[in-house]
Length: 107
Image (tube, rainbow, N blue to C red; front, side, top):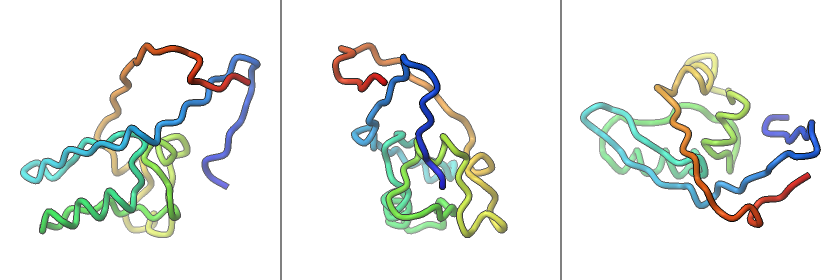
């Protein structure tokens, strides 16, 4: 099972990133910048609307998000041909957001 939650310490923080679903497509460079909450089905739908050959070839399962796929280096049924998540990503950027910690679930 991919995407499982393992709580190892009492101060673990769980964050809901579903609203981080932005996407910027750069057709000229054949890449895109996406938020961690964007699901891969929406990503492929938006990429197909560009009219080009852009696609995200992984097939992890319905509802999988970019952040979830990154957390476990997802593969899916197309991994033999296209590789896993890490072979299809150019770089990660981590942005620190300072907000009220009451929005987080502590375990």
